[in-house]
Image (cartoon, rainbow, N blue to C red; front, side, top):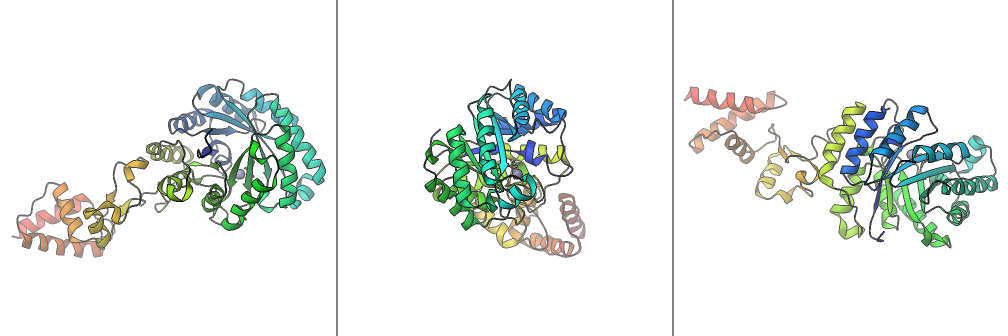
Length: 388
Ligand code: KIV
Ligand code: ZN
């Protein structure tokens, strides 16, 4: 893989599904996986096969259906989990096992009740077990964002020697700050002697609303895989949103100097599909995929966009799968947008005075009514015609 390629690892079907209320059937997972494949996602994490028989069957169905993306299954650093993942992925054209164990002091002491040395030993064993099923193995030190960097270096060096090709650094509880997280990635890459044998990946949660910012800070410091989900779905406040990461890197290539292979025109279909299946509505002001992401209401903005789109748009709505940008008529709208909409509706008012009178009536209406629809404009203009 070329160094300037940023690998997009989608975990909507695994971490996204861990969002309370977002569980999906096998058929739903396959439908979403096909859309992710169409979008040219590099790696699809299809689920956690040891979690339940249902999830095992879902991962198996995705592995059997998908041809152009690598299919990944999650496994704790336990032999039985890894065996289940290996079995579920048997039919995949390209399979990856993703194994993890926690490395922060709080997780090791309070949750795992293991010493740091035991954790290293278990991590190495896990990677070796996984290598019996595939040569594509990813390792994650869970809660890396709160782990001691010296200890992370020891664990990661050991798992690379054991055969892990991807080192994923999770900010499991969304605790990191962008500058700090970027520095962590840079230090790990510089300090681990065999670091160049692995791809560095990041997996950021959004508890402080920083999942995308932290992921991008990591990319600036050499991470070449980002783990993310459609619409930012995921545990608690969610994961880094795929659409935001992809479009940030694409729109600001001058800053990032790397590119994904994502077909961005498939972003909106993917967003609608995931929202429809899970029942999780997308907030209107959500970047890229929210209903207002490419909508303009204020007169100044509408006038600017009608004269030249780039005055107020840094991306084209069509490039991420919307049919077009949107001029919303409301009390902030100006004459130019009003006239343009009338023309689109095939309404010619004949004179500048008639337009001015219709515009005044429109403003009166917009002060009273939240949304102005095309039917309102048609009614308003025929009232105008009747009055003259
Ligand atoms: O958030 C996390 O740490 C995870 C790991 C399993 C990668 O989801
Ligand atoms: Zn996670």
